[in-house]
Image 1 (cartoon, one colour):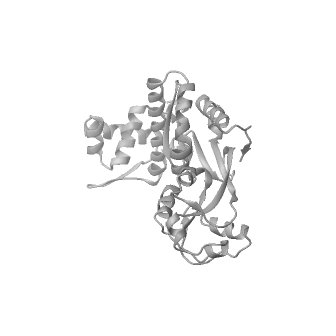
Image 2 (cartoon, one colour):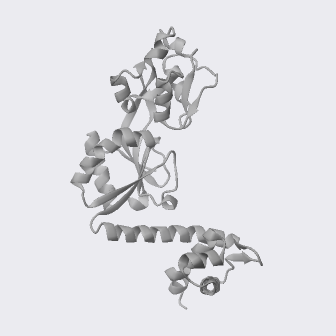
Image 3 (cartoon, one colour):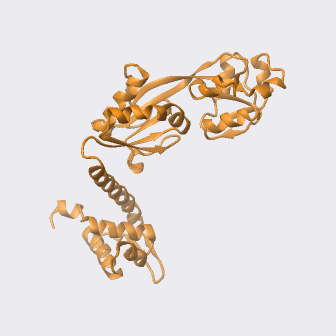
Length: 303
């Protein structure tokens, strides 16, 4: 067997190995693949012979991945997933293809999603699949092509294109404001503060911007801005929220500004594209369209 063939087992063998690794059972894998247990066992044995490594530890009751098998299973699972995605892309879209995009929950639903119909009209040959992600992740493992990220432009092995800066402001519900004497930013420091778990230093940064020392007391924490806004409207405290995400609530007077100067965050919104997706036509089309919606020239930072 030549080296090239040895390094590239056939997909049927890989599928059998992946099924056993995932299900922990030759019987369950055979049932899923509509094969006999013996056929699945032979496929796995051939793979072990091909590499000269034991991939499973077997006993009378259990089948467990060996340390080498653990590493190989992760790579095989990712490779088979990419092959499936490529096949679906070919079948569902014969031209520019599919864009698998990670979005931030509130930014995605409140700012991006109302604009997406325009992209669909302009690029009917591109299908966007949306996934919600908070924080960093492994693009290859998640099988995603790009992400809209809030933070700093320091994502490893990726290009970060600046989309927009963010201005945050303290807000309260009208009812909350009516029952408390809130005249200056100092008054806010004595009130219940609502925190975003992904931005633990936001309030400290804002108080510093106002020339004040941040309070050290605990406060409610939330994972998404939408939930923080709802809690604030319910009168649970003061929230520090991006103006762009609460424009509707401010316009409807469901939230009102609290005393203090709005502040531009140190972090910003970026379109993050891993280096191996730079030439992806769907990614390039989406990036150009997104920047046209924001109306600015791209500022790309490679990390």
